[in-house]
Length: 107
Image (spheres, helix red, strand yellow):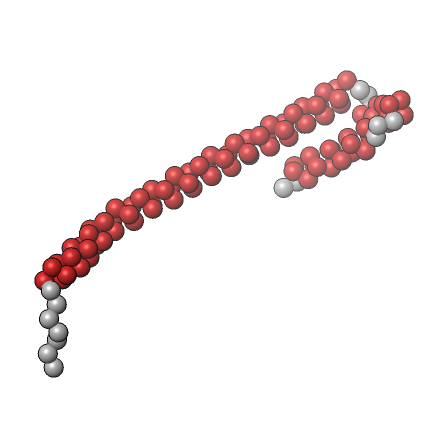
């Protein structure tokens, strides 16, 4: 069975198109890898900054708690007195903060 005749210009165009696609594929693959690497590195730095911010907040809370213990004989009694005067629930906030700090210490 004989194949129908195909114009050589058509076969040349298809062949050139295939060569172009095959020739460009490594460049496209490398660009996708580089783009993925850049995105991953950006997320890595964002997570590092977020972790530093959280550690800074915990350090400030711990320093505040230490100063409160240094300046008062009984932190709980001082917090209870402050709550009675201001009626803002400071003792509950301090108790919650102490619980959170103890949870991080016990990890």
